[in-house]
Length: 341
Image 1 (cartoon, one colour):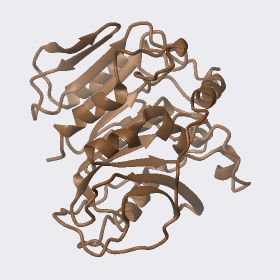
Image 2 (cartoon, helix red, strand yellow):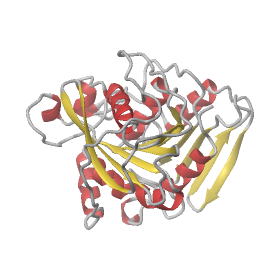
Image 3 (tube, one colour):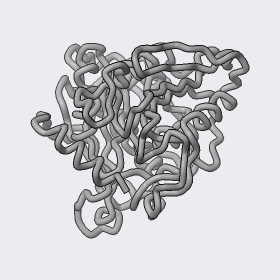
């Protein structure tokens, strides 16, 4: 298994990355009642939001907690300079890979840096490890998400991580002014699998997704609306294989290829037009299914020839990364033009 190696590589690459955070336990209501977590298995009713009142959180990085299924769950939020607490603001929710955490994900993606220049909220949830699942402490070994075909203790224990995200978003709505039409999901590896899971089960809230090195493993998958997908993957990924596989052992099940994952969403989104090339630079090429319904509900695949289990655009290219595709920036460009109807 290469998950542990990947975690150690991330630890080396992220050495020296620091994040200032503060705890803010204040709660202020928005103009609506926020999103109420639904009964298990049902999608929440998402309120329309044109403005917010009474919110006091300003720019900065915050570490917050919520209670879900008898456990304290953690998430980090970066609020950019220029944020207006009265105006609904786009949010990108980023899910870390197996064995990682929200701080490493923030450093890996550099999403907060982009959020500062583009003016959106960056949200980093934390998955659960085996000890936390079993109420035996806070050992973060193999923290991850229950994402259909992947991965680790959360997958084995069938943790209700979709329910956790409902609770997180409900809590987030009491703290910052989130645009419910411009809430997006991305993730790396196990987190990429989970972003697909959310597209399947929470299309009412997530406008579009951009998984990296993670496949669609949800069964069944019956989204309530077409969801635009931008999938990025390296052809030489030894952990989550580009061509699909059943190599996860006790960490997960059989998963489809990158091409099959995207093809499924092209079919769900009613894409009947030709596949066209939308990006090409060096080792990286992106294609998109067209003729979708609506047209913006494209299903796109960015392939990095020779790319390994890394976040494209990472500056340490000795570990199979690429300078030719900035996954963080491409995901945001994709999201900008695809708000939820």
